[in-house]
Length: 500
Ligand code: HEC
Image (cartoon, rainbow, N blue to C red):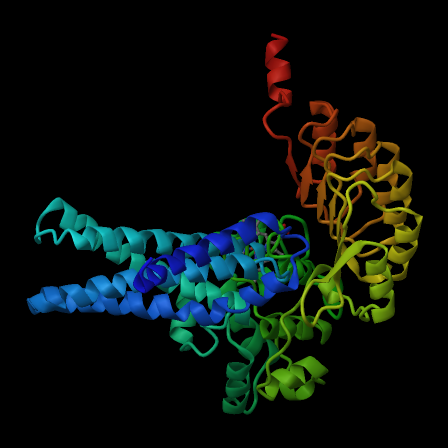
């Protein structure tokens, strides 16, 4: 073979090896090599973005100024951009195995990335045909470039959100645009506002502006959603359908505060789903106002600022307010305890670089939670938040250890021999959000142990022995939980109509 031929097939070889590697490694327990390749994603990803945007720009210039000789440059840029996009997607798929990315953002970012790779190849292919302006093919090409451009923008933005946390792009955005997007004031702007008003009132200068921009579109005298108007002091004092929303002096007892601090995907969270949650400074200021007595005319200078409020007035960033287990202060696990657990063939992975939390699964499906492993698990119990026992031969009796994992948030038990009686070990897990019981023999009597789990949001009961009545009972006990039954179970409505 000629030397140049090797060069031509080398990229395909690399891609094939990467895909094989992807198929054969276990994403829940990735080897270091996979995580190493993944780290290249954020470097590689800039090449296709630059190349493709340049191709689009040149194409636009070529059309507007009728520059013919750019065609071959544009084709080359599109091909190089498409190849770069494939490389970025592959590296991204490896990076995804590192825990700690926000699932919804990640999934959209990933789909956009794959879309960009496919679209850029299509654009390249169509561009090779040199379709004349006005032809259908030409329009397809132009359309593909427009879509490609918007995918690049949105995908890039989501990528920065994943690495730098939400609000990265909007942090220094002028407040006019932030308000238009429904975003509140960052801490810095609060400091500027405080400096500008010598005699600021806590309610009039701090709290009311927050309510005005974030709440009163739905809570005003004309349209008091939930019976609550937040545009005047009278409305606030009156409360809503369910009674008062404020307990002066006690923010933690106040319905307003409870609603603001619920996890954003909770149906009761305010502002409701789809709207940006209050920023940490905004929530902190409202809390401070209520704790100080929820007065409508107290001056800032008359109250004692809490340490967090002082931080806001100094223009410092606050840590994002965290909910669920993340609001707890938990010390990291002892590294020898983690090593001991790994020695028993438990796969133990940290949930994020600065998090104490751990994700655990059995390295062997046939030998899962033996006596040695349960003992090791107990030594890292406060830190274990994700536990994956799905599709293993874990003994039902070994599940007693679950009661000793107080901060468990995700538990997978699908396709195991878990019994109804064993679910009692879950009944005290107040942070459990996700429970997968797919393909087990769990029945209605097991569901009873789940009915008081306050945080449960996703429950998988597909291919189990539960009945529609049992599920309906659980739905009433846990209105916020999404209960997934697949397509097999007749609903209660069907039962009643068939009786007619
Ligand atoms: C997009 C519309 C919308 C926005 C914006 C909004 N709410 Fe609501 N709010 C509702 C609806 C609808 C209800 C009634 C349903 C419910 O109770 O969840 C409600 C109910 C409430 C209740 C319970 C009232 C009661 O007695 O039942 C409180 C408290 C509340 N909101 C506070 C707030 C606060 C504080 C903000 C701003 C941070 C806010 N809401 C922003 C729509 C909104």
